[in-house]
Length: 190
Image 1 (tube, rainbow, N blue to C red):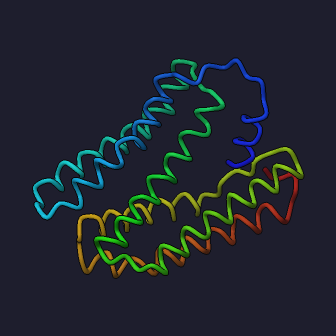
Image 2 (image 1 turned 90 degrees about the vertical axis):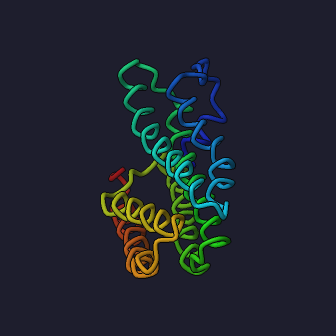
């Protein structure tokens, strides 16, 4: 992902960035402050509205890629906005859960640290080989499960959140090892 950002920033692309799919990706990030406010309320009825924003985020995450392909609006910017928006959302929700819902700081730090390491590794690989490595399936599953853990914390669903935290963090870290081994063993596997 970081390789894509670097390439895009240094290119002279006339490609439009203001497309419906890109706006959907950006809207997810723009709504995060409202989500935080709703979920931080002591009035649990407002949490339902926060839940509605989560549903909106999930639906637009699916829709932006589909619409980009269907309407032939796939852009380099969109290839960046979507995953970066997802990471921003995960970090914001994680910080919220640490501040308001007792998500262990160590768990958040390990997951975020792994993500930072992956971005750095992707950038190094891009600089060396000119290509961004693809994700691995176990990483996609781990990210999905981490998202579920964050939702369990956000909605204060205990003890489920606490019970799921460490196994999911372990899987997340394992996914990082699998990713590293896959891409360090064979330079041509991208």
